[in-house]
Length: 100
Image 1: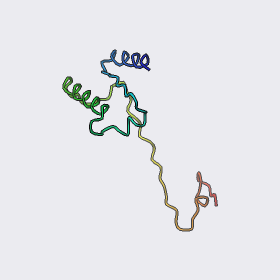
Image 2: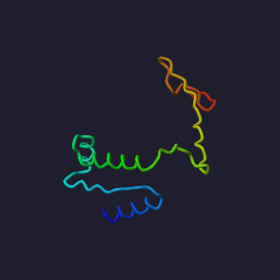
Image 3: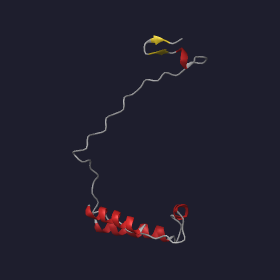
Image 4: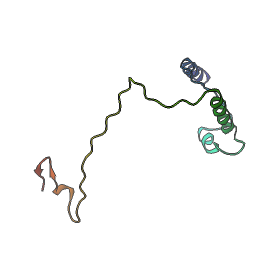
């Protein structure tokens, strides 16, 4: 696991993104999440310390969308008609022809 983390940390560092490793000995993946936020939880304390350090070190930057990123097209809207009591979806007209 450490070699994978070191590769990931090095890649993040190339882009100026800080990273840290927290070894949660005696914990499982599930117990890490279920104890997160509990008083005196070491992982919670490590995350809070990381956020405090980063918040103090870097001024807040407004989020922006890169100019090269195309905007996401809006999904086409479909008109949906509610079925009347006793009507089945098979009795609706499909593609301009009567299905019933």
